[in-house]
Length: 175
Image 1 (cartoon, rainbow, N blue to C red):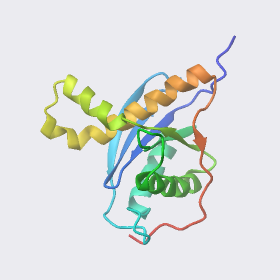
Image 2: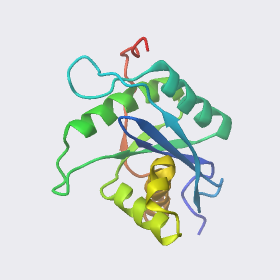
Image 3: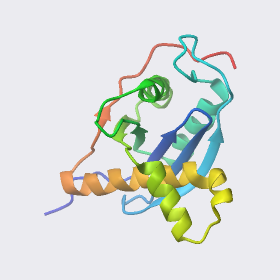
Image 4: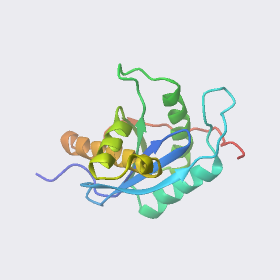
């Protein structure tokens, strides 16, 4: 029986307040690899809920999605260990709404990212990278962890996984 998961590059994102870690897969969706870390300008979204969506960082992520020919974007949704969402999740949801609007018709899907950054730090430490140098690459490593978990879940489920994000009609901040 043929695999039901459509072929194509998948992009994974770890959206933080300061940086966005980016990873991508091979066209068969077997292995996630780091791409880059996109810096987000400091600002708030006007409601005291953390960063808004800036045009420069969003434009760079959109460019990566487009040039890679991605068929889906998986974004880590930060949750508390209890499974509840906090203010960080609200910021990621806002970012993803704008991203979904910008990359349509490529779908954006939210996947659980609990402990992805912790796993990324452990992997970097295990690879012999000194702790002081983690900051530069931990967001990419977390994006790899998020994307690899989504790829593995796709194979188990036989199709796309995660919560589909509806495109937002809100405009981005004016940097």
